[in-house]
Amino acid sequence: MFNWYLIFTLISLVYVGKAFQTAYTLWRQWATFWDDDITPQDRQLAREVGFFFLIPISIFFHEVGHALATWMVGGRVAAFRWYIYWGYVQPVGYFTPAQDWWIALSGNVVSLLFGLGLLTWGYWGRLRPRILHELFLETGYFLAMYTLVGYPLLSLLGLVGDWVVIYDFRRTPLLSAATGLVHLALTVGLWRWWNHPAVVHRRLLLVQGTGEEMPAAPEGEEGEGLERTLHAARNYLQMGHPPSAIHLLEGARERVGDDPRVLALLGESWLHQQRPGKAIPLLRQALASGALSPEETQATRDLLALAFLLDDRVREAIALFEQADPHIPRPVLFLYWEGVAYLKGGERVQALARFRAFLERAEGEPALAEWVQYARAFVEELAGEEDV
Image 1 (cartoon, rainbow, N blue to C red):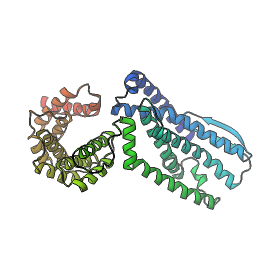
Image 2: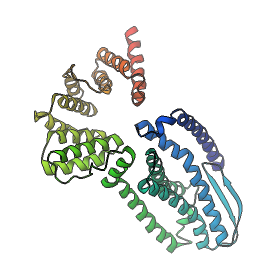
Image 3: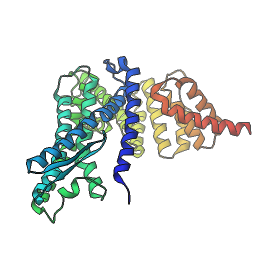
Image 4: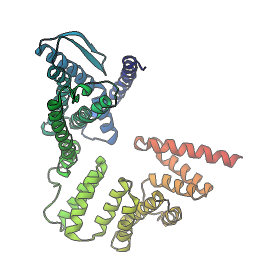
């Protein structure tokens, strides 16, 4: 039988090591992290800071909640253990089933309130620097959803935890049933609120400071209104929320028809969702309009090539990549995707040349670090074949 105490303690020690690593990264990036130029790397670091430094606080108060409930029903706390990333309370006394239910539930109520408090502070607070909005919003949502979904699953799968007691329908049928209804309503309600386009839009404004003049759903789409819509959709993609971009662009499409820029950005949004089948007809229609500028045409052609590649239509992807205009600047990442297309098409010499060209331009770019790693592996493999 597993010793869960030992396993959780070892996991906690690993997290402590990661916390020191996060603290070191924060120290090195201190000035850029707290300025108002918020990059994807800043947002990722904010999530790590929240997880490794705020979650332990919530765990401590979770156990305090169990202890207070134990004292409330006349019991005593024989052991209070807090191991930074996990803990437990050992209540002693003669408890009724309802009192056992309350002791088990209380810590989770505290955790949920802690998470909702962070969400409230991050969403409605006037925080400076702006990265604090990201820190509190993301940590609060994670903690609330873990309390409502993650921890119950661990408990109900037979591992350890409070929810086995909370949902013991044999001992507390009415309390367990009532808890289930409230539990479901809170989970669905919080998820829908977090993903509502208006909420996503406000989070974008809070974190990126893009300006209150950019409405989530502008009145009318002619001229400046359409530009604001496109700008808002691009920002949603930058924040990693393609469903909100799709919602906004579909609304614009209903009002202004098949504007090629709307179609192209809508196709790009579906690509972010890993849905090339949805993206391809939109990107094709945008190109066929002939109304895009040369730069927009190049960008849309590259996106269509990427969609073909993701849809395993390699020959069509290569044909489009080869139409690239050398006089129009392109995102360097498309060199990597060209390499992947040539590699999948069996043209290994061409693939090696593209990966090398990508590495020459992408070295030292933090946002491309993952792709640089992949490209290096491909170069090592292909160059080794060349040597043989």
